[in-house]
Image (cartoon, rainbow, N blue to C red):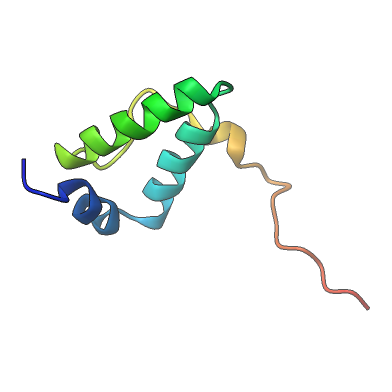
Length: 72
């Protein structure tokens, strides 16, 4: 495995894919699970995996999601 392959893979993914990786990690309730997911994510990225598997990001996005309104 090339040194820093996960770093290169991270920067080669799309913004949405990166958000899915982040949401997958932060959706874990326990710190131990989050730490394991960081390690797993680094390994998966180093192996060339571009998207997180077995993760449904639909709970993070909704039609009500929008930018804040400017104050009058």
